[in-house]
Length: 521
Image 1 (cartoon, rainbow, N blue to C red):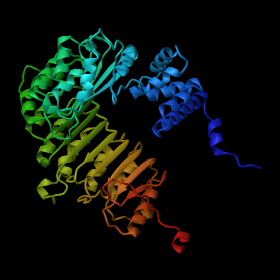
Image 2 (image 1 turned 45 degrees about the vertical axis):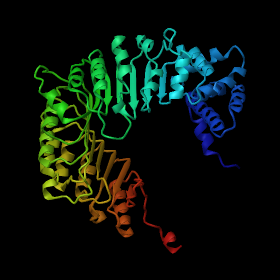
Image 3 (image 1 turned 30 degrees about the vertical axis):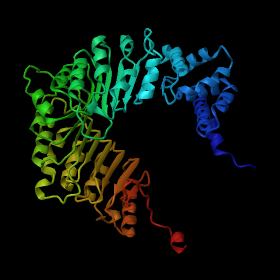
Image 4 (image 1 turned 90 degrees about the horizontal axis):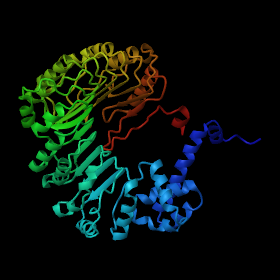
């Protein structure tokens, strides 16, 4: 009697929709492998002629490489337009245009399918491409992208002349365009000015989502021209989401602060413009509709304190704060105290604080953030996800007991220390208290003290399904095995992950005590 195949058992136990989804994914994988392995566009086109599913998947893969669409003309002449239209209608992500080998025929084909495109991603940075597009008069005749919903512009050129090829003008006459994403590797060279000015000139007021991103990896600033143009655009919009990783001008902050439907905000603050923004006494109610706020700043100061004090949204659920340099424990406590008295403290369910506080420098007593500075955290009763990253944060066992009692709905708790050296590992007793008194706790990750108590003293019914602890580098194997034994008792639903490798890649090593057989071998 043959052994039943477990994979077939799983297959027969699935619904029809689940089976169709797996077949769909498998067909796309086959097409992509065929294309990526260099078997030629003709081979992909031949595979596409076998069935409708392969045809749609081939169109999806080849559409992402616009110069590759020509072989599809051989597939059922006269039906390519209908097939492409259905493919685009069913799969909104098949609308990325890339021009690696620009030619007039390719541009004509893009123009032919322009009315079907809903998501356009434009990578700009080659003067040859720019000249080709201008020579063909690509954007000279009427509105092309009539159904465009989202437009991403990636600028990776220092040359302003290449930006003349950017889709503009009639693009912003389309009232359905509500998502604009701008990326640049050279933000100091006015990459967005003309495009933003087009938005103003065309009085485009229907944006719901906007991103302005510096991809250089540096602490860059918007140029004065881009800053003025961006502020003008913000003055006309009613955004729901706004993301910018460069400091905004103060009037840009003013426009954001009064938007009636702004829900998600991610921005970088500098102290000068933040101070100017907070001095504006004419704005009494600011950011009243935020549900998520993510702020990056150089350090915590009186200006940033005033900024957080100006937020009056009573429904804020997610708050993320990250600094790029060390802040004083006194200023940190001032910020936490302010937040603990805010109108949204009872609504916050996610709190994420990252302090890049110089973990490679031996901390002084005056630099350490202790329970005294962290005490305002007990005033957030509905926290479900908590993450701290700091080399200077010290949690005492007694204070961890208070936190566990204050956060009965806690789902995830992460306390991360950057670098190999951990000055303040988490006491085991505090961890045990969380396991016993937070019934909804599912995810917990922290660097533990290696002083493991006797196992019989600790019993727990924790249901946590993920646990990862770090140990200080160089801990003997016997100590690692003891830690794994202890955590297996504390979190019986799974095998805990214990990382004692501390490698630069952040890898995790699962170590278990070897069995008698393994030791003998």
